[in-house]
Length: 207
Image 1 (spheres, one colour):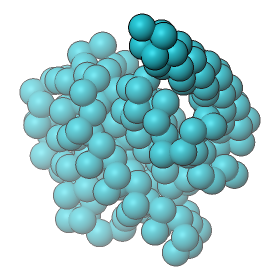
Image 2: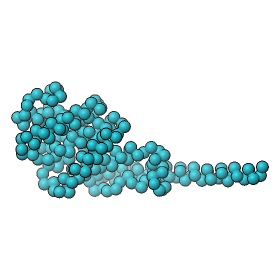
Image 3: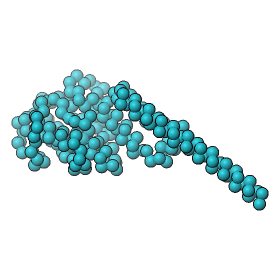
Image 4: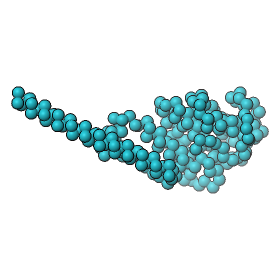
């Protein structure tokens, strides 16, 4: 009996230590997550390797236990999109072009895997903006880019009909599509209203 009592006491002590360590690590993960969120919001284009190695335990044990993987993946993908400088059209240079290529690949991958419809819609919205940052003089190439963007924004709206940014971007690209002298009928069958975006300029909302 005494042996069992000692064994149970030892087991209880181990469990207590594990729970204490886990509680401390949960606080550390929450703190690190908030700190990295603040850094990103303060200077989004200057930050690197955010939301990695959160907490005290190795291997993101607490992150996995809390089910934060999707949240962190979404944050990292948005950070890549911001680094791609979607609002900048001219004089981008090879580094920005490479960042845009990487962002487009990750946005495509993440938009397929994202379980949350609101976030998935926003990722599609970002994906539609990437090619619009390029200044294109060739009418045929511009037509292809606009058609692809229209399709992506339409997908974003279908996934989340409440995504106002995606709706705005869809209308803006449809106006640009018609202004460029391309077929007047909108591929979505929707009328585009509001101000016309500047041809060749960056359009977009939500970034």
